[in-house]
Amino acid sequence: MNAKSTRRSFLQTSALAGIAMPTIIPGSALGKNGKVAPSNRLVMGGIGIGPRGRKVLSCFLKQKDIQFVTIADAQADRREIVRRLVNRDYQNEDCTKTRDMFEVLERKDIDIVQITTGDRWHTLGTILAAKAGKDVYCEKPCSMNIKESQELADAVNKHGRVFQAGTQRRNVDNFKFAAGLALSGKLGKVHTVHAGILKLKPDLEHLPEEPMPDKEVCDWDLWLGPAPWRPYNKKYVQGRWRGHYDFHGGAGLPEWGSHTLDLCQWAANADDSMPVEYEYEGDTIHGKYANGVKLVMRVAGFRSEGNWKVPGTCPVRFEGDEGWVEVCDHGKIITSKSSLQEGAPKEGLYGTDPIKHVREFIDCVKSRKKPACNQDVTRRGHIACHAAAIGWQLGRKVEFDPKSETFVKDKEADKMANRVRRDPWTPSLSKLPKKA
Image 1 (spheres, rainbow, N blue to C red):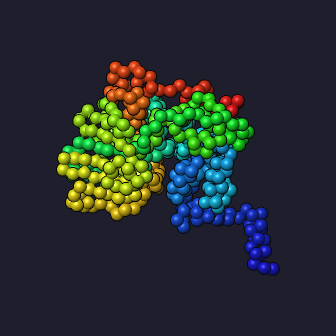
Image 2 (tube, helix red, strand yellow):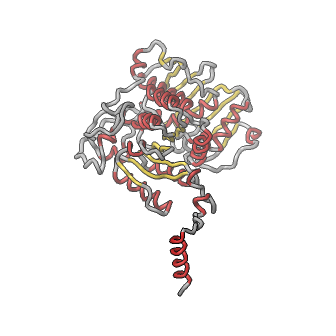
């Protein structure tokens, strides 16, 4: 008799005799061999994950204390890509996929949701996730207008959730260093902050109607969600929705401004406020804070056109009466004098990389502390972007009250602070409508 059959016979005999045998537990279940025990993992699901969303997801998958379990998306090909990506990473077939986001939100085992849909879904998705008791990582811009910025923050606060906007540069070393120079007084008294933006453009005409696909291939009604009904065109769902007012922030300004104005708010020590006036000159928007600090939003392309010192995307410049600093996505730090370079980090993490931002969010989910780009910081920074865009669209100066979060004696501007959501895609939504 060989060793295996002898052991099998012994186990069978022992079981019949009622002899207690030790339970063999894999090391991974105990958190050994570099693994995190299941009891210490955060379970995660995704809603709407395309190319940028997959970059964010890859950062979550690198965290040993995260277990991604399911993806909901209106498009069949995208949910299948994510399912395969996750299962390949985990070397199993456990990740599921669904068209219905409520299958994700209703799961009691899920702690976190990643929302990386198009802009039109960011606020509503966050509100529904917060109501379902989930913590949220949401890509920017997180809102389509001023009202949504308020609604998002109010819902997250009401339900006691942890929220992180995907404005990841607050956790990228060169941007942190530049903001530190401004906040520490090393630049002297800060008087002007500059935010790089893309060239402002009028809204695009809608694309021509094309035959609508089967809803299991692409659920067009679900893809539109709270946006007004528009005829289907394949280019929209392939990412060409940008620039169309129904799907995008005004003039495209919140798309880029949410990246860089957020950093200016930080450096100006204005996370609890926002500019009180905006006026434009061509493609440049000039703002002013109540304390006199000036905000300049000016064009910066992929080579940083517009008299920027640093060559790269998303540049910002902070100026004080004793010096200035400029930084961008390429990790470069340019200062007015060499002494300001003391302690500067080496060029490292690219500005679009959310790895440290994701890690900070996870740590805050565990500690229940507010992360760098929490709902309140996001609220004010996004409102500032939307207010600036409204002034540009109106073609005139506008004044804004940071306390009431309304324009000053300007009914025309106030009307542009909100958009009507298409029925039934509202915060009261409890499940996908049957017609979907």
